[in-house]
Length: 459
Image (tube, rainbow, N blue to C red; front, side, top):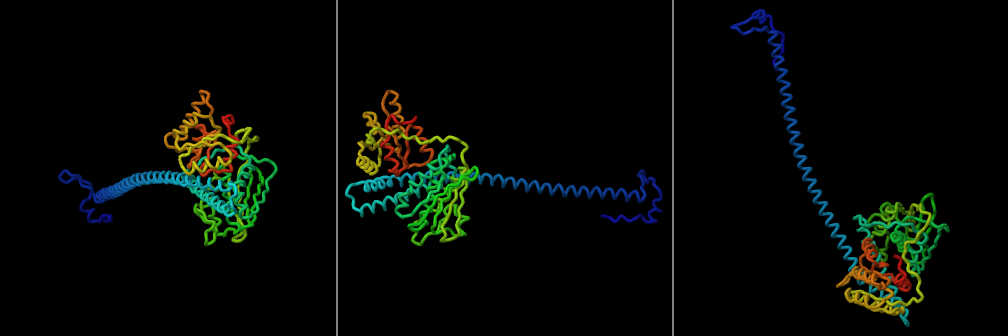
């Protein structure tokens, strides 16, 4: 920029005042410099504007590029999410099919073991083998259930059927399921429950699963002849159920992660009491779905452990049992129609029920089974869901359609290798009275059969 010095005296003398030269106005030096400085200022402003315009143009180009990258990233993320959802769906379908295929062979194994226990003249050695088989079948079944529940919970596929239930009934049912294990290991269980009935809004089956997992863990990590305890306390509007043992305890470094998926508890190198590390993760998620929390305590290895489940008490004053238990008939011996396409499962269950004194007829496909059910009156129908010809849903729907013309419908029990909630709900909605996941719990099945009759359903 030119130096804006004051005009010299010589310039002033040459120009004098303002005049004209050849018709052109003649400015004095001061006026000329003033105008030049104004032009220079305008040029500077224009240059700044040009630089700002260039910078704005660069910014627009960068924003356009960033926007294109964002669109591409969004499309990529959407594609990845769709692929992840598809992968998760295939995984869940695979796990469900895996459970179904594994449960099918477990069913006849479990039934055969139960038959051994009830046969006359069985030697103590055979009974010992029977106990081993039953114990391992139970262990495999529990592993399957935990693995499937972990997969379903992580994908948001688990829903609860909440209803008012007595906490004492849930705990009693839980203790019944692990009683044999406690006897085998000569472990004692102390129970401290208030006499006052405690009602909670819960999914009874899922909550029993919570306490069963905690009790099995307590037994697993407690030595033979060890001590376990269940304590129930009312604290304000909550109830706290504590499962305690005097077993191996939990290291302090493990406690913060004890409910994480695939976290393993302490075990020996022999891994005789191994697991998948998913049971406590399932416990935490189910408890949280009930609006509660679960916490673990231990002073360290060798000091035992304590798990506390806190649940809100129900505001419902009345307790209504949800179980549809059939009325007790005059005679416990029933005429049973068994429809099961797995040959081993069919034969073992038929022989087992016959040994219990029931009259059993069987079919290996849905078409034959439906024809038998329509041709003769049966007290109880035990029907597999997945059948060739006509599936279990088609059979029960056809029987209820025939009931409109006056036919009797047997007390219907569904069997399936699928254990998801929607599978159970669909079976009950179709007209089955009860639903069992394979392998069937014989101790639950036998009383149900003995008490079941066509006139005992509650609809």
